[in-house]
Image (tube, rainbow, N blue to C red; front, side, top):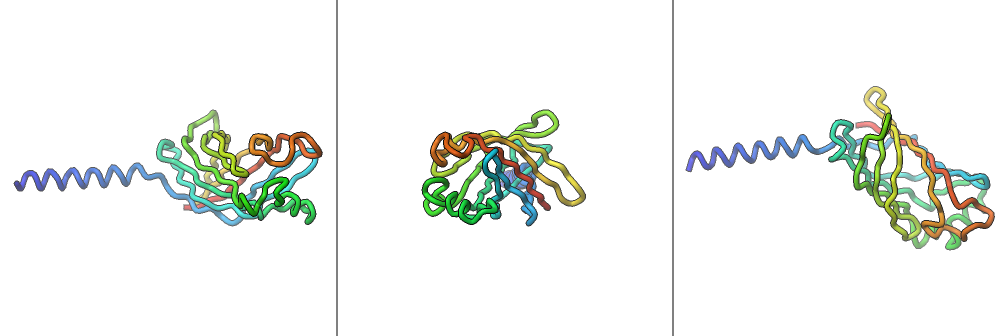
Length: 177
C-alpha cells in the first residue's frame, strides 16, 4: 500500500511538473499598440484592442492568441466617416461590437511566424492566416504584422463602390511578461 501511495504521489508530481512546463508565457498587452487599416480611399485606426496572448518561441504548440478589437473605437480622422463606418451599412457596431480572432495554430515561417485561426467580423467567421514577427527587447517584446483583408468576405459595405475591396491592416502590439 505504501508503494502505491508513493508511486501515485510521484506520478502526480510528474504530471504537475509536465503541466507547468507546457503552459506558454502569458504576455500582457501594452498601452501603445497600433491597429491601423488603409486603402487608396480611406484609412484609420481602431483605438481599443484587448485579449490574451500566450506565446513561447520554443513551444509554439502551446502558444495561442484570443484578441478583440472594439468596432466602435474606429477613428478615420473624419467624424462623418466614423459614424458611417459604425452604421449598419458597414461594420454595424451596434449588432457586431467586436472583431474577434482566436488562433488554432502558430508556426515558424522564415524569419517570422504565421498564426492561423478564426477571424470573425460582422458576424462572419472565417479561417484566416496572419504573418507576424516577434521581436524581444529587454523585458518586453513586440508582435507586428501586416496583412490584407477582403471586406467582401465579411460582408462589410457593398462590393465595389468608393472603397477598395481589399484593405491593408497593420498591427503592432507591445507586450510585457
